[in-house]
Image: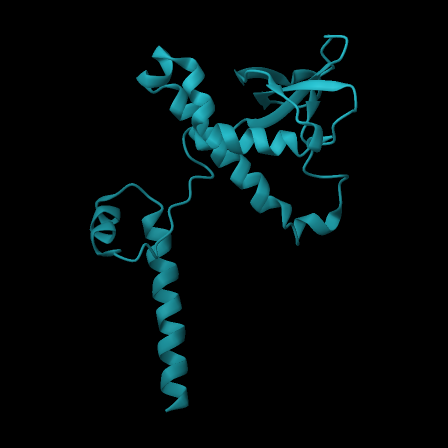
Length: 179
């Protein structure tokens, strides 16, 4: 009996693996499989799609000082330094993925006609508030009175690196308890 259950489990995973491979290609078989994939067990990866993800999002912020001058833009850092262990164990990857998803939702919301008519309403959205909370959790100098954040897209490396601003927030007063 134990051998039968082992064979059934192995057969299940082999079939699942083969169906997952078939599901990666745009073919009539993918459409048929999608109709029966009620539980969403067949993954659809797009690492090598016609237009793969070729840029990274960067979240930056700056502070307005008591003298009303703005500081330089500072990037919200997710990693302190490179470590080989990150290739195996990387719990910060979840936070980075969440940030990427939040930014994508914010950028999608910006295309909504409601926000085009009244751009200040974007400040009431969940993605905006989440990004504002993230930058407000960064260390704050004592002489800062306001904070502003921006979302950038960067692609390339070294001298070929291109950085494009995608969104710049309004400035927000810094509460005393945040310092």
